[in-house]
Image (cartoon, rainbow, N blue to C red; front, top):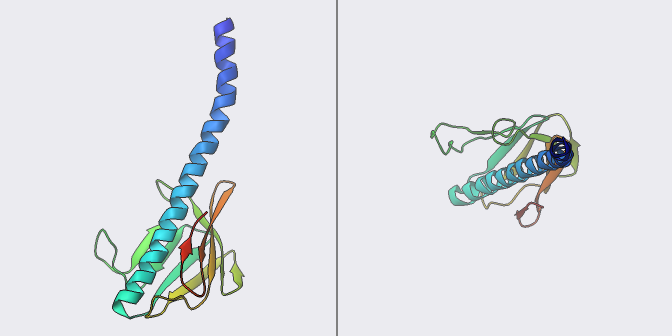
Length: 145
């Protein structure tokens, strides 16, 4: 009986910690994926000397890059969905060029030199946790926490 009580106490402590760790891992992976895709758009714009625009569906996990082929299928446009496995994340809000949006669509464009037309702060969420991906207006440098 004592063993069952000890197992119950340990489980009550461990399960919430495990759930929090899992959310943190998913959030970190989603933010890194988003940052990598923003960097891909920037590189593609620079290499092709053609503007590349990322369209974010704020409030969902979806975004597309017009003129960039999907890395797996080669079909255009490149489309990503952070709300599906393994991330289960949403793009909670965007602030591009100072314009804050928490719903609808918004766009971030890189010119033919790979520089953004405006700075951006993209907020990704998993459950109650959030992380930001930042694009510097002057250099286009993409950072995550």
